[in-house]
Every structure is written in C-alpha cells, then in structure tokens.
Image 1 (cartoon, rainbow, N blue to C red):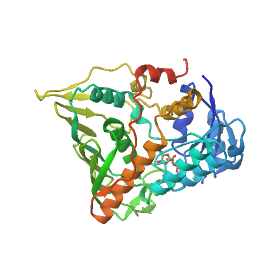
Image 2: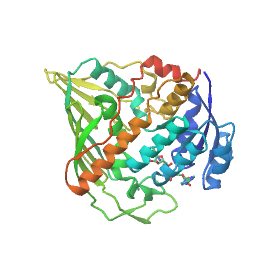
Image 3: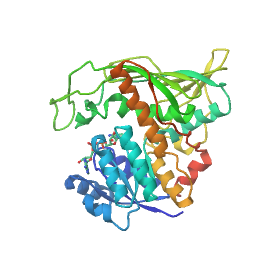
Length: 374
Ligand SMILES: NC(=O)c1ccc[n+]([C@@H]2O[C@H](COP(=O)([O-])OP(=O)(O)OC[C@H]3O[C@@H](n4cnc5c(N)ncnc54)[C@H](O)[C@@H]3O)[C@@H](O)[C@H]2O)c1
C-alpha cells in the first residue's frame, strides 16, 4: 500500500497517543511534528525519533502529504484551513470546528482543491461499536425506536494540566465529549433531524488539580450540564445527558431500544468493551466476543486504536474511495452539537440544516487490512 507522509501540528497531551499508535497502521508514515511552542515540538520529536519543524516549514514540507491538527478547538478551523491552503490533506482532532459555517467553508475549500479532509472521533471504528452496528444492521433488536446516552462526571481539571479550553465556548461536555456519542449515534442510527435541550452551568470557576498550575482557578464560560433530546431522520428519539457537574451516577453510557429487544453499547469514547443485548425474556447477556482487531485491548485492559480514522483516510486516498471519518459526518455532528447548545440557549426545538450518510461499516477483515504487519 502507498504510504502517506504524515505531519502533526499541536504537540500537547493527545499527540503522544498519535505518535505512539501511528506506526501500527500501514498507510501512515509519521515524519514530523510542529507547534507554536517549539520546545513542545522538539520534546515530542525527540521522544519519537521525528523531525521538529516550525508550523510554516511543515506546511511546505515536500515529504508530508497529510497534516493532523492536534491544536486546541479554538484554532482548529484556522489551522485546518491553513493546511488545506498549503495543498495538504487535513485530518483534525474533534471537534472539527466550532460553527457550522466554518465546517461548510472547510468542506468547500477541500473540494475546490481536490484534497481529502477528515476528523476524529474514530472510536466508532472500534470493535465494540462495529459489533453494535452489525447487530443493528442484522435486525437483532428490530428497528431502533429510541435510546438514552449519559456521559457525566466532574470535568477535566483534576487530570489535565491546562484545562482552560474545556470550559470555554467550543468545548464543555457537548463539544468536547459529545462528538464521541453523537458520531456513534449517527453511524448506528443515521442522521439527526431536530434537537431540543436544557443547558446550564453550576460552577463559575474550576480549580486545577494537577501539574504546574495546581490550585489555580479557571473561569467557566460555557454550559457544563446539558440534557438534550435528539430526533433522528429514521424516527428514533434519544436522550443525551452530558455533564461535568455530576460527582456520581448510575446511568449506562448508551442504551438503544429496538422493536424486539435492547442493545447496550459501551462507552463511545473508547474502542472496545462488551456489547450486551436483551430480548423479550428481559435477560441481558453479552454478545459473543467478536474477532475484530480494533476491540482487542492493547493498552493494559483498554483497546486504543486512535489513528484508525486517519489510516482509513490515507488508505482511501490511495484506493480512490470515500473515507469513513468524513467531512460530511463531522459537519453534521458539529451541526447536531451546536444546535443542542442553541436549543438550550433559546429553550426550543432546533431543526438541523445538514445531513449525511452513515459511514460504511468497518468489518474485522477491513480493519485488519489497515494494520501494518507485526
Ligand atoms: N487530551 C486528550 O486526552 C484528548 C483526547 C481526545 C481528543 N483530544 C483533542 O485533541 C486536541 C488537543 O488536545 P490536547 O489535550 O492535546 O491539548 P493541549 O493543550 O495539551 O495541546 C495543544 C497544543 O497545540 C499547540 N497549539 C495551540 N495553538 C496552536 C497553533 N495555532 N498552531 C500550532 N500549535 C498550536 C499548543 O502549543 C499545545 O502544545 C483538542 O481538540 C482535544 O479536544 C484530546
């Protein structure tokens, strides 16, 4: 398979995962990293045997075909736009952008330049979520009529050394963690038609619990406690509770109710876990383990195949096919999430203006084909 030369802009927390996992995929040749903070770029480059470039040099580098944007959400749009303007394919961490208009502009720019653009999350390509997809598509629980999703905790300041951006517009639990849930729901159920929500913020500040700024407080300028309703184009209705104001709860991550049974999907923030099913006898049992490579634990007891979406995009470019973590999927997810925030602000239902096809499923064999030989 043709390998694409990969560069990264943004050498913060998540760049370690990308640098660690990229070599696992045969379509990716990670070569260089860049950051506005050259010390961060040099440190990451030294740790992984890569080249440290300035952002400008990376954008011009002849050995780089695709640039991965791992900067903070506030600058995702501007950085991805620069990548495309430089004539490179672009792949962004989530959320792709903070407004629908920015997403549409990137879609048009990439199309005009004949470049590929993709976005995380790619956790829906995980073994668990592909198994749930296969069960739904096989009709194992009948047509899905509804569901509930809960992603609740007490936020990011306990572990992240610079949690400022999590509490600013463009993050909060809906735009930061919501992409995993919304994207997985779209792959499982199809596009969303309309949303309603209540959105509040309980705490005006957060106190950093880790790193050099331990004890410092950061302001909260975005809703941190959201209860949303999603109506899908296929008629299914789903509740989404996303909060960083909750200390403890007993809700499951994702339950989907079908006409003949229910499906229990593990946390969409991760690739693996057990998918459970319950039928008319009310017994809930785990589906037999599936031989899907992206469900196999590879980091202690956790499956982490971050870069799978990027690798699928690189392979798709070489093979001349559509990639799964597509711009249409990402733009629709941004539309869903920003519409939830708008619905919360205006206390009304908001109809979406975008739609997308479900991404193609990723079978165990198709996933195996993305991996480099060991
Ligand atoms: N940390 C995680 O576990 C995690 C997990 C999944 C996704 N993400 C996503 O990844 C992205 C990055 O998160 P992070 O935790 O690594 O953030 P971070 O703050 O640790 O790192 C961001 C890096 O981007 C650099 N940067 C900022 N603006 C830039 C610009 N204009 N040009 C070049 N470099 C710039 C910063 O100097 C910093 O090194 C976010 O969108 C986040 O939502 C993070």
